[in-house]
Image (tube, rainbow, N blue to C red):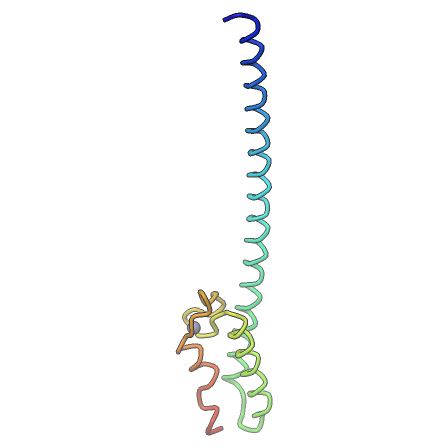
Amino acid sequence: MDKRSLYDGLNEFEEDLQKLSQNLMEMKGSLQELVEKNATLELENQRLRERIHELSQQDAKLPEREKQELSRSRLNLEKIYEEGFHVCYDLYGARREHDEPCAFCLEVIYRDSSNK
Ligand SMILES: [Zn+2]
């Protein structure tokens, strides 16, 4: 190997290293974003679970005369559902993939609403 091609070879190697280093930085950035997003989703999930738990507790305890409060908690459940989350007991707080409808959620939101 003559000096010229050794020099060119090192230059190429240096460029490759720079590209790799750039890729590494980008991947680290993406990972950081994913970690942050995951933490946010976990918190959101937790918050929704607590909220739904609260709402279903309320719902269970409510006497007839607090009909208005009941319909308010239904509206809340409905809102959470419409925002794309399950409110049914098995999956509550989980995201509804592609906004798939869930009969159990609808049951939770609308059960007995016509005869109360
Ligand atoms: Zn559901």
